[in-house]
Length: 441
Image (cartoon, one colour):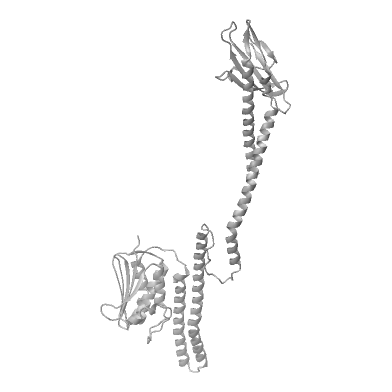
C-alpha cells in the first residue's frame, strides 16, 4: 500500500504538470492571436478582438476566461481593467510571462505577451493578457492520473497473475521433494535425487546430501563401536565371572589368591581394551569428528610419551631408547598424537622378547618421521595389511592383547594426513613402524 501511495503521489504531480503545459500553450496561442490584431490607425491604438482567440480556451467544463489589452502608457484598451500584470522578473526572452494570481476570489492562470510597436507615432509595447480559471486543468490532470493508475493497476494485476503461475510452476518440484521427504522413514538417510530440481536449488541439495552422508557415517561408526564393544567384552567379563565363582568356592587361601591374581590380570587387560576402544571411537575418521589441530613439537611429545613406558620396559629387561635431533613442528591434536605414540610403543614393548631393544626415533627433513623399532618376532609380510583391521591378531601370537593398537594408529594417521607403514629393520629381525607427517607450514 505504501508503494501505491508513493506512486499515486508522483503520478499526480506528473499529471498536473502535463495539464498545465497543455493549457499554457493554449493561453500563449490565444494571446498571440489577440496581439496580431492590435494596430495603430490614425495615430490611435485599435484592437479587433477575434472570437477564435477565446474559442481556443472553450471546453465542456464551465470555466471563465478573462483578457486585457494594455497600452504602452498603462491604460486598458479593452478587457478587464483589474486583471493583474506580471511582475518584471516573470518576463522571458520572448516577451512572454506565465503566472498565477487570485482574481475575484478564484485562482486563475495567466499569460502575458508584449508586442512592440514599430513605425508609428506611438512608441513602446502593447501587453496582451489572457487568463482562465483552472477547472479544465484539474479535470485533465485527474483524467490523466486515473487513466495512468488504471493502466498501472492492470499491469500489476497481470504481473501478479503471471508471478503466481510462475512461482507455482517453479515450486512444484520442491513440493514433490517435500512430500517425498515426509514419506521417508526416519532411518532412511540415502541421498536426495536432485535431477528434477532447478539449477539454483541443486547446490542446496548437494550440501544436504553431504551433511546426511556425514550423519550416516557417524551412525554407522557408533553402531560398529557398540557391536565391537559388546562382542569383545562379553568373553573377558564371562572369564572374570568364572574366576570369581572359582575363588569363592575354594577353601584353600593359596588357590583363592591364585584366582584373584588371574582376575587382576584379566581386569588389567579389560581396562586396557576399554581405553583402546574409546580411543578408537575418538580417532575414527569416518565419523567426521575432526578435533582442532595446533602447532606442536613432535620430538617433545614423543619423548614425554616414551618415558611413560620406561618402568614397564625395565620389568621385561628391554632397553628402551629415544633418539631425536632438532625440534620437528607438525600440525595435530596433541591428545590423539600422544595416543598414537603410546599405542606404537606399547605394542613394541608387549611383543618384544625379553632382553631385547625398542628404539623410538623422530627426525625431520622433507617430512616429519616417527619410527618405533623393536627386536620382537615381527609380522609376516602377507599379514602386514590385515593387522590394521580391528581386533585382528597374528595367528600363533601368545602375547595378550585386543588387536586394536595398530587400528587406532591407522585411524589417527588418517585424520592427520599422515602415512603409516610396516617395515623390516636393517638387522632383518623384528618390526619397524614408520609414520610420515607433513611438516607444519
